[in-house]
Length: 252
Image (cartoon, rainbow, N blue to C red):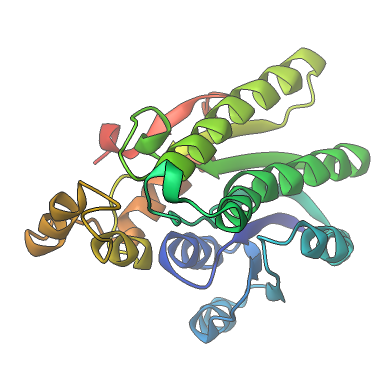
């Protein structure tokens, strides 16, 4: 009974780091991703904390709808009172000039980066309100949401939609006094697989690739564990501002 977290993309990067901190804080975690992370299972065992992984392709909306009952049942079985939802899973691909982006790649990108987090949030908002649970939601956004970057037409656009969705949902929750809070969190540049994908881009598709290669060469990429600790502090703060777009650069 108590606090639980639902984390998308928990198998690696920021999702794994956030899940680890939740478990170390005694907060049970339901992880949603295609792959299991055995290290998280070990951390849960060491901290005598609940952890459950639900294999899910978040780029497939049908997969979310089919698996949501399992999420809901688990929260009910564990008598959750407060639920943290971390919509972390995302992809920067396709990295390409707009005229060269394939439609199937564009569709998959928006399903993963925008439709999936919105769908999961919508479902949990309705469920939590019906069951008397309190929601604290973090939508992982990016500086690309407010800064156009050549080669990133899909990524910039999907993250911009996340910012506006966050602000709109927060407005709705405030209007009806549900007590639910939602924020967007921009984590900056981290040493993750997404960065590796960016560095491997061709200069013709992404003119800024050399800058990102230099980030790695100059050790300018932050550890995901540090970024996760900032996000956790924000979520645990009673003064967390509903609808705010938080930027990690103001904290580290």
